[in-house]
Image (cartoon, rainbow, N blue to C red; front, side):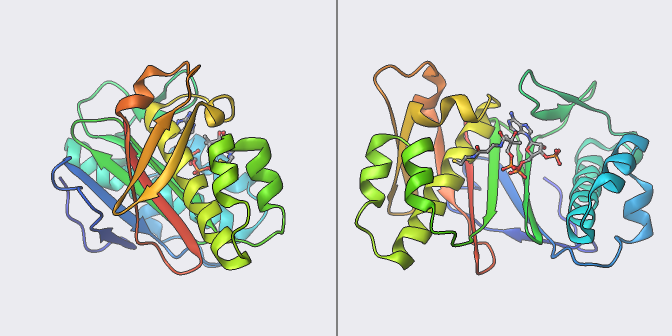
Length: 233
Ligand SMILES: CC(C)(COP(=O)(O)OP(=O)(O)OC[C@H]1O[C@@H](n2cnc3c(N)ncnc32)[C@H](O)[C@@H]1OP(=O)(O)O)[C@@H](O)C(=O)NCCC(=O)NCCS
């Protein structure tokens, strides 16, 4: 696995990462200033076009920085120049390397920060979310989470509700991103519950994704005001 010190990244040390041959990087913070030229130069034309379509400078810089850091890390792992890395996508849009050996990976961005997860063995998913109180958390949970998750959130005080809501959200997204499936259609297929240093994942009886039964998920130590999780399928 790659080690890198000049990029705007910090390596996280989440539970069980070494056993699972997983490396997780926190990238950022992205701000109003443009990303350094060497990073910009490794982006493809499509990625530069996509960057320029973001309205807000922070979103633009976060996307460009994440993609450039991802390219640089993959370039070191696969021993190919960063601007020659080719991506392809799974049926539901999950990017993977095209035409070369290299680690499995997944990225997530929110606010000013991004997560990049790399795995030598099992498909990986990561999710980071800026935790914003909207007052709609229980309504969202009723609409998108399982009944068990909704019941676990009902009755929590405001602080605990916000924290627990984002723990469940990031875990569900990381698990489904590890599987590389469509996110919205499978959110109610399983329940997650915080249990010590990992999440317990329980599939619903009519679940159409048997791979969920062997998925594992762990919380990540992300900056204050954010929640983060990685999962392996
Ligand atoms: C990409 C998606 C799966 C997640 O979106 P998101 O949380 O807004 O974005 P994140 O930053 O966490 O993840 C985006 C990255 O995931 C990757 N990705 C895209 N589709 C993916 C898929 N099906 N599986 C895994 N990874 C995927 C991409 O690398 C993408 O980043 P990129 O476009 O810069 O390359 C989105 O398509 C989606 O379905 N969002 C809906 C989320 C939702 O309803 N959540 C409810 C709360 S539980």
